[in-house]
Image (cartoon, rainbow, N blue to C red):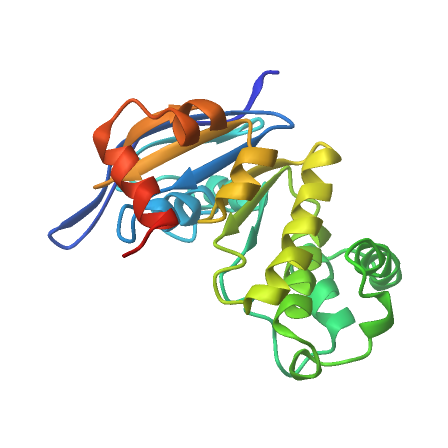
Amino acid sequence: MSPLLEVAGLNKSFGANHVLRGIDLSVPAGSVTVLIGPSGSGKTTVLRSLNALETPDSGRIRIGDVEVDFAGRPDRRLVTRLRAQSGMVFQSHNLFPHLSVLRNVTEGPIVVQKRPAEEARAEAMTLLERVGLADKASQYPYQLSGGQQQRVGIARALAIQPRLMLFDEPTSALDPELVGEVLAVMKDLAADGWTMVVVTHEMRFARRVADQVLFMDGGVVVERGTPSQVLDAPELERTRRFLHQLTDPL
């Protein structure tokens, strides 16, 4: 599988806080990459950089045939093209509360991509069917459970027809009984060949679905490999301590 996503030398600081320190990443098309690590390790900043929600200080990002070198001032039109390559699913779904479920899903295709409204609505209904929410199309976010809202968020991200799906701890804000329904949708996407980069603490998901796992700490990738390598037989003591804290927090 050739890389759909390639990242080289990614650096990002917020004031004196050097959050990313030379991140390198290669994600083959049709594969699932899971980022794990303690809070503040830079995982979310990586995702936001891939989606151009944050502008890296330096480094290169290529998704498909769109590549941006962030040294100096990158061309804004090229950055916009890079952003269009990926769909982002946030920790707290970020739905528009004043719009129906259907309009939440069609907003990007109609308003941003200028696609015909009827085409966008037909595809949105197909996507809502895919995530099990076609019967909720006319409802509003406040009428849905947290898990349903997050599934709408996934449909909304898919609606822009991205090449890469990004998930930033999509289940961390959910009650435990709602986590499974969101992970089930993500597993189906992986089975259908979607290229995904996922930040999560759901180790069972990582073991079952990921092709590679990256452990981040202090803004660097400390360890990387298959789930069996990183999660079951990590080489580094730092990785072992982190995984032990997940399973035995006391």
